[in-house]
Image (cartoon, rainbow, N blue to C red; front, side):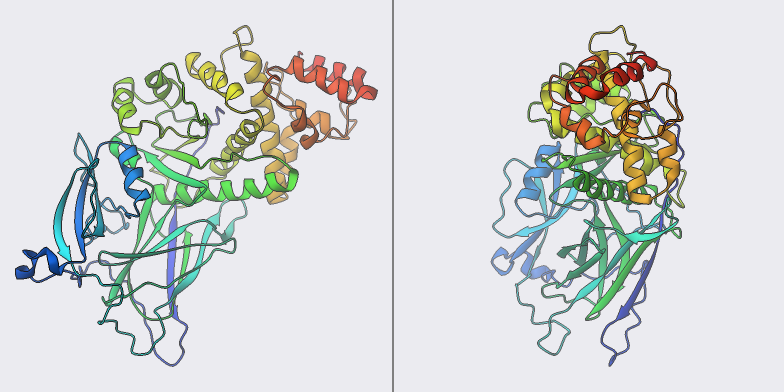
Length: 505
């Protein structure tokens, strides 16, 4: 919804590890090139006897996002690469999707059935809950703990990253945990038997999912962004300090972190100011190499319970910039998994995220809190207006009042939110640059600020939360909002008229 010229850069991480138990040396060296045997694999002769197996290692053929969701709801952890695959020097796996279906791998109980999802059994495994081969000699469980931090380009320093799912993968056996508000996580895997484990991070919890839309590999959009951080020695009480910074080239990982950081910080700002956030799980798509290089969007399609879009293929092409031919391919794959927020990035920038990526996401998240207040009955016509008119259109078009009202709100509020988070006056100064276009950037801030340096602005002290309280499904233009403001603040009626007139309303 916001057009913002930007260049973004990508990430890198420094991955440290130390042992908490000072009585035993623990080097925890990285091993990227050495495959390790699957300790759960039954001998060849036993492969013919399923009665000896507790689990099976399978390859799924997934044709749409609904099938992916169904498997996750059954507790299957899906990876788009085999357990013994080795990532390249940038810790990126090569996927092997076909033109018809996406290939994902998982470990399931021997009695597992998934009639709606085709799969092949690759191997039978013996994975009892209590492993007799555990290398720990005492009764203590193996413990993986640590902290995840991310280099924030606006602060120019590393900050904790909350809400990341950390995965410890011992061959085909998987244990998970989540980073908290301090970036800390702790995992106690059950029955690790191999000397080396793989550490992965996944961008998914009960409030958000991040996916990547890649025009060169459309089926990737089915999966949730999951990244390997390499293989580590599987030592007891290991401290895994993960700093996603500037030492590693992986644009998708970096922008996943930046999107999550923006979401976390905006939620904190919204809670402090009394703004609502969407109650449904937020689905974020990152557009690899930017199908529309300068366009972000907040269609809120996942949160809207009724995705009654008149032409989804047109929406994909016009709103997200997907080639119409590819859009026709994507629609049956994603089904009801259209995004709430779309944010493009360039894979060629891979050392540190640009400030503008996070700043623009604040604009989009400001839209999301507006959606939370007014609901689908307001938002669906807004989304349809945008893609049917190829953008903002012009003030003479039907429903253009929604655009002038909402885009100005998102721009002014995002600057307030960025100042709240980063305490930088430069963001407030952006609100002082009034816009003479039909989208009146600066109007909302002029209602709030107490400065008298602008002759046209004699209104003051109408706060953003107070303006927000006036929003409802029927406030679809600035003219309607002006009437509600005058009724709520009768002593400033004349000044409100004068201010709106300066902006052309």
